[in-house]
Length: 60
Ligand SMILES: [Zn+2]
Image (cartoon, rainbow, N blue to C red):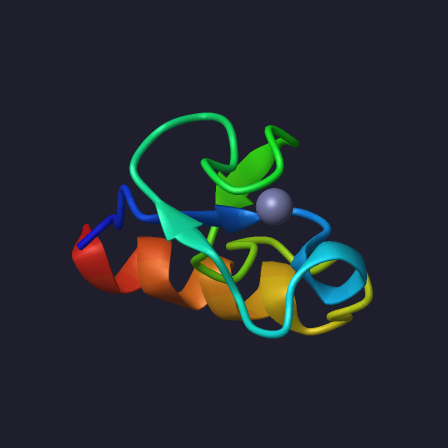
């Protein structure tokens, strides 16, 4: 399930702890808020494409 919860992109610099929000900006500092879920694609994951190919094949 995709999460809509966002976290202040620079909370490490501006806040003591992560500031979560449902809006596109941080309510505490007005900065950008980014999706709190980890990035679905890791360009450093050399086996990611291989794994995804296996998944696609399994679905067919
Ligand atoms: Zn903030």
